[in-house]
Each structure stands twice: as C-alpha cells, then as structure tokens.
Image (cartoon, rainbow, N blue to C red):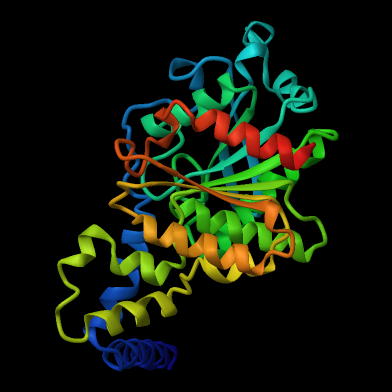
Length: 328
C-alpha cells in the first residue's frame, strides 16, 4: 500500500512542477535570471588566480578580513590604511588595523560596481589614490562577489553595505565614515544611506561615482542590451524581469529622502553610464535637499571614461575639499 501511495505523491509533485513550468512563457523562465546575471555579473571573478587573503601582494599596508552580515553571509573586506601610516602598519595584524580606524583619518566604505572583485585593477587604483590622500579604505565584496558567500539580491547588497558602515562607525571614534559607491555601487550606497537615515543615523557623507538614476534607465543603455532594444516587446519583457527580480536601485527616489553631504562625480566620456544620468540625479537631489550646500556635482573632462576618474589630477583635491567643508 505504501509503494502506490509514494508513487501517487511523486506523480502529484511532478504534475505540479509541470503545471508551474508550463503556466509561464519561456521568456518568463529565461529573462529574470538572465537580467540578474547581467546586472550583477558576479560569476565573472576576475582578475583570476588572485589570493584575496593576501592583499599585500597587490596593494601595500592592507589587511584582509571577514564580516558576518547575517546568518550564512560572510563578506570579504580589504582594509587599506592611509599611506602616512604605512610604516606603522608593517607586520601588523587585523587587530592593529581595526584599532587604527580611530586614528582621526576619515574612513571610506567603498561599494564597487558589477563584475570582478575587490582586487580589480581600477578598484586598486582608487584605493591607492584615497590612501595617499589620507583615507582609510574598506573595500567590500558584496555577497556572491569575490570570496564572499551568499547570492546577490538588491536587498542583500543593501544589508551588506549597512553592516560594513555600522561596523566601521562603531570603531572610528568621532572620525567621519563616508559611503562611496561606483556604478552599480551607487545604487547600493543610496539604498543603504536611506536605511540609515530612516534609523535616525544619517551617513556622514556619500560619494556617488558615475551614478545612474535607477536600474531601469541604466539597463536600457547597457551596451549588451542596446542591440535588442528595437525587438518587439523587448523593453516590456526587460521591465517585467527587473520587477520580478525586485531590482530597482532607485537613486532618483532615494536622494529625495537623504540629508547627508552628497558629492556626485561623473566623466564627460562615460559610455557605460552616460553623463546625462548623473546630471539628472544631481538636479533631483539639489531640488530635494533643504541645505543646497550639501549637494555638489563635479564633471571630469574626457579621457577617464567610466572607471578611471581617480587618474585625473584634480580628483583627490575635489573630494578632500568637499568633505573637509562639510565636516568642518
């Protein structure tokens, strides 16, 4: 009797799975995971053959450590101390680096864009420029990126950013901590800043490098997807997939609820996220902020594209000037 019963239970399960599969169109099965893959691109773990546990092979006076964001999610982080503390840092371990966060030098929590991980060359360049400029840099790999565990979702990346910001804030004494987002990371930064604002703990400052308005406008200009834009029904399918995955990253909505000093940096020749989106976001923020002096946008001349604004000679001065005025 038990064997036929097991067979009928299995049969019902298979029938239910079949109904569930056939009740959706093929595009409903394919598009949401495809969009998730294209937006996060976290499976592309370049540069390859890098031991993320040994950052000193890639960048000096840096330590690798891990933070638990929530059960089952462990985040890999590189802490680069300011270059002026490089000699002190030699041979020191994680405890020394953690204590150093309270040394009076400002702290940047760096939230990177899609694909690759914290050892990507353009991310190392930025960390080095900021370190030379007197900043601590905490370069975070979100869940599912690099050697961090878990699977990326918009809500999950936001939790990761809030976790690292609060961790840094708890150790920095009175020193300010800045959330710095690049590209996809700008959406993570404003999401996290809004969560912290609603908790009554506004972020000390936010820097958005090459930001978009929201993921919908960013996606339709994504180089790989531009090819398909003229296909009938493509944009509707794209929007449905983003909605199903709950991928929004609404920078344009988030900035209306923030009070933290906000600096937007964008390159004139950015082809990945065109300048018009950064400008539009700046206008929305400027209009929404009560204190207009807290919002600033700086546009960099051609030559630095999407990833290399930090190579501009005025980059560091721009950032330091803005933050020192806001934190005076």
